[in-house]
Image (cartoon, rainbow, N blue to C red; front, side):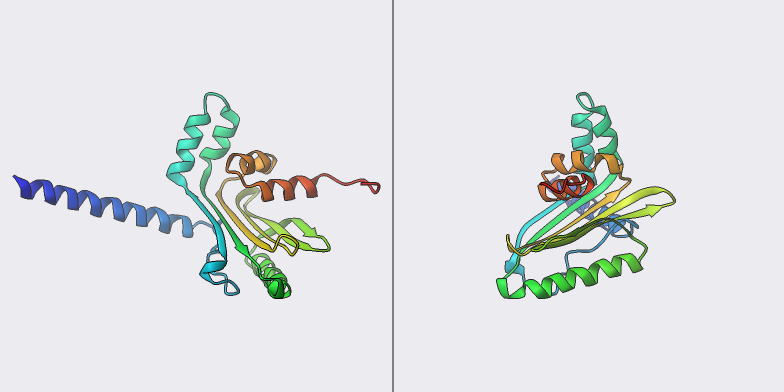
Length: 193
Protein backbone atom coordinates (compact mmCIF):
# COMPACT_ATOMS: atom_id res chain seq x y z
CA UNK A 1 0.00 0.00 0.00
CA UNK A 2 2.93 2.37 0.57
CA UNK A 3 3.98 2.29 -3.09
CA UNK A 4 0.71 3.63 -4.60
CA UNK A 5 0.71 6.57 -2.17
CA UNK A 6 4.30 7.42 -3.11
CA UNK A 7 3.47 7.07 -6.80
CA UNK A 8 0.45 9.37 -6.41
CA UNK A 9 2.54 11.96 -4.55
CA UNK A 10 5.22 11.87 -7.25
CA UNK A 11 2.57 12.10 -9.96
CA UNK A 12 0.87 15.04 -8.20
CA UNK A 13 4.22 16.83 -7.76
CA UNK A 14 5.11 16.28 -11.43
CA UNK A 15 1.71 17.58 -12.51
CA UNK A 16 2.05 20.66 -10.27
CA UNK A 17 5.52 21.38 -11.65
CA UNK A 18 4.36 21.02 -15.25
CA UNK A 19 1.37 23.32 -14.62
CA UNK A 20 3.63 25.89 -12.95
CA UNK A 21 6.07 25.75 -15.88
CA UNK A 22 3.20 26.08 -18.35
CA UNK A 23 1.81 29.10 -16.48
CA UNK A 24 5.22 30.79 -16.42
CA UNK A 25 5.76 30.09 -20.12
CA UNK A 26 2.30 31.49 -20.82
CA UNK A 27 3.20 34.84 -19.23
CA UNK A 28 6.46 35.14 -21.17
CA UNK A 29 4.53 34.61 -24.40
CA UNK A 30 2.12 37.46 -23.68
CA UNK A 31 2.56 40.61 -25.76
CA UNK A 32 2.53 42.71 -22.57
CA UNK A 33 5.50 40.84 -21.07
CA UNK A 34 8.98 42.38 -20.79
CA UNK A 35 11.90 40.44 -19.35
CA UNK A 36 13.54 42.97 -17.04
CA UNK A 37 15.31 40.21 -15.08
CA UNK A 38 18.39 40.36 -17.32
CA UNK A 39 20.08 43.62 -16.42
CA UNK A 40 23.72 43.45 -17.59
CA UNK A 41 24.84 46.44 -15.50
CA UNK A 42 23.83 44.81 -12.21
CA UNK A 43 25.08 41.74 -10.42
CA UNK A 44 22.94 39.61 -8.08
CA UNK A 45 24.02 41.64 -5.04
CA UNK A 46 22.58 44.83 -6.54
CA UNK A 47 19.03 43.43 -6.58
CA UNK A 48 17.41 44.74 -3.38
CA UNK A 49 13.72 44.14 -4.15
CA UNK A 50 12.12 41.57 -6.40
CA UNK A 51 8.35 41.30 -6.26
CA UNK A 52 6.77 38.77 -8.59
CA UNK A 53 3.01 38.32 -8.36
CA UNK A 54 1.63 35.72 -10.75
CA UNK A 55 -1.90 35.03 -11.97
CA UNK A 56 -3.06 32.70 -9.14
CA UNK A 57 -2.22 35.26 -6.43
CA UNK A 58 -3.66 38.14 -8.46
CA UNK A 59 -6.91 36.21 -8.87
CA UNK A 60 -6.94 35.46 -5.15
CA UNK A 61 -6.59 39.19 -4.37
CA UNK A 62 -9.27 39.99 -6.97
CA UNK A 63 -11.72 37.61 -5.31
CA UNK A 64 -10.81 38.87 -1.84
CA UNK A 65 -11.59 42.47 -2.88
CA UNK A 66 -14.68 41.69 -4.98
CA UNK A 67 -17.23 42.36 -2.22
CA UNK A 68 -15.71 45.61 -0.93
CA UNK A 69 -14.32 46.96 -4.19
CA UNK A 70 -15.85 45.27 -7.25
CA UNK A 71 -14.29 47.81 -9.62
CA UNK A 72 -10.76 47.02 -8.42
CA UNK A 73 -11.56 43.30 -8.43
CA UNK A 74 -12.55 43.57 -12.10
CA UNK A 75 -9.30 45.39 -12.95
CA UNK A 76 -7.25 42.77 -11.10
CA UNK A 77 -9.07 39.88 -12.75
CA UNK A 78 -7.74 41.08 -16.13
CA UNK A 79 -4.08 40.84 -15.02
CA UNK A 80 -1.70 37.92 -15.44
CA UNK A 81 1.50 39.09 -13.71
CA UNK A 82 3.08 41.99 -11.85
CA UNK A 83 6.89 42.11 -11.68
CA UNK A 84 8.98 44.69 -9.85
CA UNK A 85 12.78 44.81 -9.66
CA UNK A 86 14.73 47.44 -7.72
CA UNK A 87 18.52 47.62 -7.99
CA UNK A 88 21.07 49.59 -5.97
CA UNK A 89 23.12 51.81 -8.26
CA UNK A 90 26.73 52.56 -7.34
CA UNK A 91 27.43 56.29 -7.50
CA UNK A 92 30.01 55.80 -10.26
CA UNK A 93 27.56 53.77 -12.38
CA UNK A 94 24.77 56.37 -12.58
CA UNK A 95 25.64 57.61 -16.07
CA UNK A 96 25.89 54.08 -17.46
CA UNK A 97 22.56 53.11 -15.90
CA UNK A 98 20.90 56.23 -17.29
CA UNK A 99 22.22 55.43 -20.78
CA UNK A 100 21.11 51.80 -20.48
CA UNK A 101 17.58 52.78 -19.42
CA UNK A 102 17.44 55.13 -22.43
CA UNK A 103 18.59 52.24 -24.65
CA UNK A 104 15.95 49.90 -23.19
CA UNK A 105 13.27 52.56 -23.71
CA UNK A 106 14.24 52.83 -27.38
CA UNK A 107 14.09 49.04 -27.71
CA UNK A 108 10.57 49.00 -26.27
CA UNK A 109 9.51 51.65 -28.79
CA UNK A 110 10.98 49.57 -31.63
CA UNK A 111 8.96 46.59 -30.37
CA UNK A 112 5.73 48.59 -30.61
CA UNK A 113 5.35 49.90 -27.07
CA UNK A 114 3.92 53.43 -26.66
CA UNK A 115 5.51 55.85 -24.20
CA UNK A 116 2.73 57.13 -21.94
CA UNK A 117 4.84 59.00 -19.38
CA UNK A 118 8.31 60.48 -19.68
CA UNK A 119 10.16 61.52 -16.53
CA UNK A 120 13.04 63.94 -17.06
CA UNK A 121 14.36 65.54 -13.91
CA UNK A 122 17.83 66.72 -12.93
CA UNK A 123 18.60 63.54 -10.98
CA UNK A 124 15.99 61.14 -12.33
CA UNK A 125 14.98 59.66 -15.66
CA UNK A 126 12.33 57.20 -16.59
CA UNK A 127 9.50 56.16 -18.82
CA UNK A 128 6.21 54.36 -18.53
CA UNK A 129 5.18 52.44 -21.65
CA UNK A 130 1.92 50.79 -22.62
CA UNK A 131 1.54 47.91 -25.05
CA UNK A 132 -1.71 47.93 -27.02
CA UNK A 133 -3.68 45.28 -28.84
CA UNK A 134 -6.01 47.40 -30.90
CA UNK A 135 -7.05 50.13 -28.50
CA UNK A 136 -6.74 47.95 -25.40
CA UNK A 137 -3.61 48.23 -23.21
CA UNK A 138 -2.34 44.71 -22.48
CA UNK A 139 0.93 45.55 -20.77
CA UNK A 140 2.72 48.24 -18.83
CA UNK A 141 6.50 48.59 -18.60
CA UNK A 142 8.18 51.20 -16.42
CA UNK A 143 11.90 52.00 -16.22
CA UNK A 144 13.19 54.53 -13.73
CA UNK A 145 16.56 55.65 -12.39
CA UNK A 146 16.99 58.07 -9.51
CA UNK A 147 20.58 59.20 -8.93
CA UNK A 148 19.75 60.73 -5.52
CA UNK A 149 18.29 57.54 -4.09
CA UNK A 150 20.81 55.38 -6.00
CA UNK A 151 18.06 53.14 -7.35
CA UNK A 152 16.95 51.74 -10.67
CA UNK A 153 13.39 50.42 -10.82
CA UNK A 154 11.80 48.18 -13.45
CA UNK A 155 8.08 47.30 -13.43
CA UNK A 156 6.11 45.07 -15.78
CA UNK A 157 2.35 44.55 -15.51
CA UNK A 158 0.99 41.91 -17.88
CA UNK A 159 -2.68 41.79 -18.81
CA UNK A 160 -5.48 44.12 -19.75
CA UNK A 161 -4.89 47.44 -18.00
CA UNK A 162 -7.31 50.25 -17.34
CA UNK A 163 -5.06 53.36 -17.46
CA UNK A 164 -7.33 55.27 -15.06
CA UNK A 165 -6.79 52.49 -12.50
CA UNK A 166 -2.97 52.38 -12.55
CA UNK A 167 -2.68 54.42 -9.35
CA UNK A 168 -5.09 52.14 -7.49
CA UNK A 169 -3.29 49.07 -8.82
CA UNK A 170 0.08 50.47 -7.77
CA UNK A 171 -1.29 51.16 -4.29
CA UNK A 172 -2.75 47.65 -4.00
CA UNK A 173 0.60 46.01 -4.76
CA UNK A 174 2.59 48.72 -2.93
CA UNK A 175 4.25 50.00 -6.09
CA UNK A 176 4.68 53.46 -4.58
CA UNK A 177 7.24 54.64 -7.10
CA UNK A 178 5.01 53.82 -10.07
CA UNK A 179 2.02 55.45 -8.39
CA UNK A 180 4.00 58.61 -7.59
CA UNK A 181 5.53 58.77 -11.06
CA UNK A 182 2.20 58.42 -12.83
CA UNK A 183 0.41 60.79 -10.46
CA UNK A 184 3.23 63.36 -10.58
CA UNK A 185 3.53 63.32 -14.34
CA UNK A 186 -0.17 63.18 -15.11
CA UNK A 187 -0.92 66.19 -12.91
CA UNK A 188 0.52 69.38 -14.40
CA UNK A 189 2.58 71.33 -11.87
CA UNK A 190 2.16 75.06 -11.53
CA UNK A 191 5.18 77.27 -12.10
CA UNK A 192 5.20 78.42 -8.46
CA UNK A 193 5.48 74.83 -7.10
